[in-house]
Length: 147
Ligand SMILES: [Cu+2]
Image 1 (cartoon, rainbow, N blue to C red):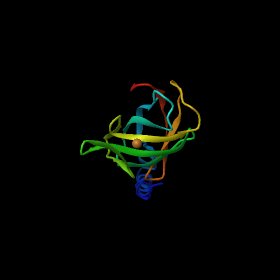
Image 2: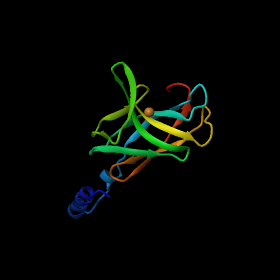
Image 3: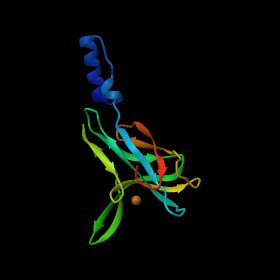
């Protein structure tokens, strides 16, 4: 647990006799999470979602993992001198009340080595790792196009 939230929680407890720990339990919310099904089987595919931070404190996504894939990393596609390149993103901070858009041509989860060939309609779980040590499991839907 975050030390600062713990302290806030303790003072709330001392003053009011109640502590809901709501700040500590507030988690980002992933919406419209999907994995793009490539036209032919590929060793790599991409996952997209809108990740909202309804909490009062900033959150940062620092990694991801999934039982459905050998390796998951956070990537960003950028155009450099007319060439589309991908780079790994070590941390994706989301300010309170803001959202991060993972979408084709921009930020995405790079999904390496699916353990089984994926088919449309499957719902792999990809767990986002937060900088504060918490994990956020997100159900993705395998689809040919964006939801
Ligand atoms: Cu990538």
